[in-house]
Length: 361
Ligand code: UDP
Image 1 (tube, protein in one colour):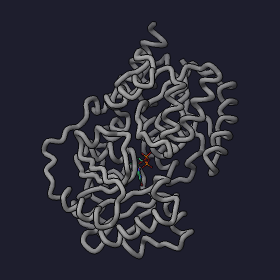
Image 2 (cartoon, helix red, strand yellow):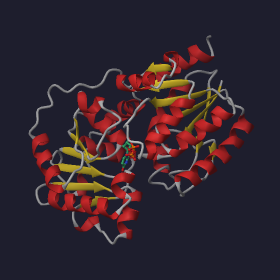
Image 3 (tube, rainbow, N blue to C red):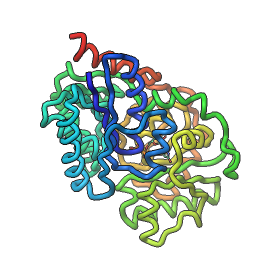
Image 4 (spheres, rainbow, N blue to C red):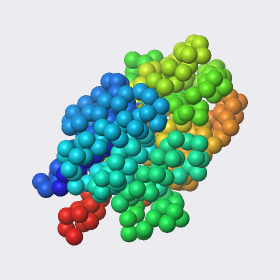
């Protein structure tokens, strides 16, 4: 069985690594990696292949920067050639980025069985590009692998055949569990104190693609910086946009460029709390039991709020974030739970189901 695993962005690399390893255990399964090139520089891409132990991609589509529409079109055009040349038995897409949807559409049009890993998540905010990608990819997929019960319910509400929906757990947590033993060392050279600092990441379009949002973030960093040590790991999109408006976050708090996977997990593991708009970070903090404040009006991952350590803060301003951190830092998370099946074995469960469906049937 020839399987094409699609990845294009940083969070995708984290998700395909455990799947790639799980497929490799079977001599009759032959995974290939297609990298669309959506994230392409070393700090957002190459370092993840190195650290996650996945080989160089079999195909690099080299799409590079551009609008979502341009990227979708370029990825589709290039991916169609890959499918024609390789004639795979299965395409696996992960997450909710442009590459996910673009390759899903090509697979569906070319009648190649399609699996979506991390299906069913819904923010119910159609202004998010990711939400569009999720809905469209799920509508096209033959097998839908889901991280939490709410996502199963979403899919059933959308009339997806229940026989295609599999509550399998979370491959983001598979990667975290795999590297759990390597993130205890505290990065002593950063001039911050273990367990005392706030770790911040922001990169969602709704927060960082306009001056008002960036100024709001700057105001928040300034306010937090008067009270706590703050480490702001800047996403390239955030840094680029901030520079275009003449904003320099480094004047306000300690900033760091995008971090390698292990470096970032270490920073997360030793922080007092995390402030973010990232999807994956909400899940990783839930698993690690680190308080997380999510600066968004919604989350497509409600289980992280219901049983994890995630605290959703809509319409944030600096004072609201500061007050919420006071509450969260003195909060009691002893009732928190790790969601069911977030145990490090999700990729294996997914591969078992795929074997049942396509090899043993
Ligand atoms: N991450 C990383 N380095 C960083 C920031 C994040 O390795 O500087 C990891 C993080 O641990 C998680 C993933 O990247 O596994 C999340 O990616 P991102 O926040 O870019 O995307 P999202 O999850 O919001 O789609």
